[in-house]
Image (cartoon, rainbow, N blue to C red; front, side, top):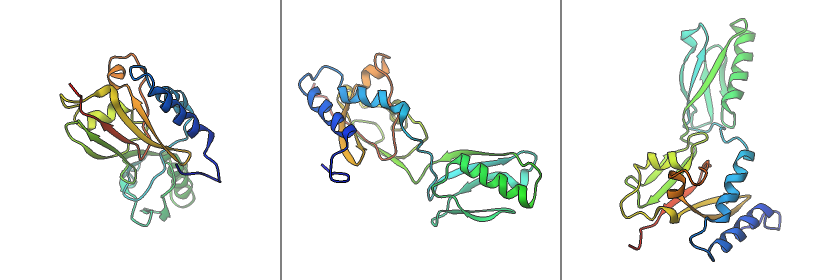
Length: 207
């Protein structure tokens, strides 16, 4: 277990203890999963841009300034009348503000700029095990675990869905949580928002 600033963060410890307790009652929903679901509303935004990410810019009434852009390997984009600027680490909202200011200073009066993410390629999620198309997938903002399995083509017939494992780094500590996927599909448990770097593994059923 990795430590941060000499101690294991409190949140990660709570999740690890919850996971250990769940092993005593295999049929019950993992308390660590319930804790993640409860905390997801408080998670910080994950929409910062990185190299390879694609986004669409629209400037109202200016077709020549509208189009799709890709963050370069150096973390920058080159935009008409504004020039090259650092997009890495910015959100779409940050880009809107920067371009609104840039265009307003040099080219347009009161520009209306809209930014929409097309695809995150700098952030990935990983899905392995008993799914039809295992592999790595570009992260999408606010993607749920059910949406992720749709990207992977769904489950194989041998999948033990309620024993699905989610591996995530929380406060610098790697944790593993059992996800009750079948119960989520049936509407008996709440869905979970994934984060960049999440690893999901679906084991084979013993039957």
